[in-house]
Image (tube, rainbow, N blue to C red; front, side):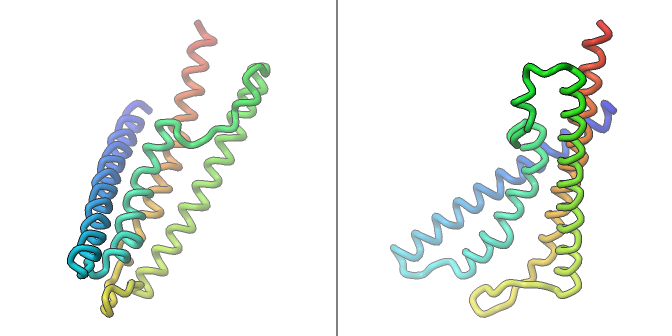
Length: 168
């Protein structure tokens, strides 16, 4: 369990770093496009398509596992703060199952979307040329799958931490 947690943490951090690079690249691309458009009346061709279809998905879906691990995504355990331990455990199990089902469905949907993109060789129009972006679609199910694994690791770690506290 510790090894799996360690590897998932490494992958999540690498995804967050990659997402940071994508956000910085997006920032520079938009800034240079605006400067080129206003000062030189010559915008960067395809900057909107690159930002929307490549950099935004890369920044969001690669950072999603780290967001889950960091606890940024909202939890539904607030109202049960003063509840009995058995109710808390049942609630934790239900929330974990709902999160797991949700991320599993999104992983499957992302996989189907990526598969459709590969089969149809989907692309976007950049200045009159069609640029194939379908390889980027594989990031969607990978991001959701890693987040699904994080759901189990975080909740199993919580459960093992709770068991060690009750044993002492």
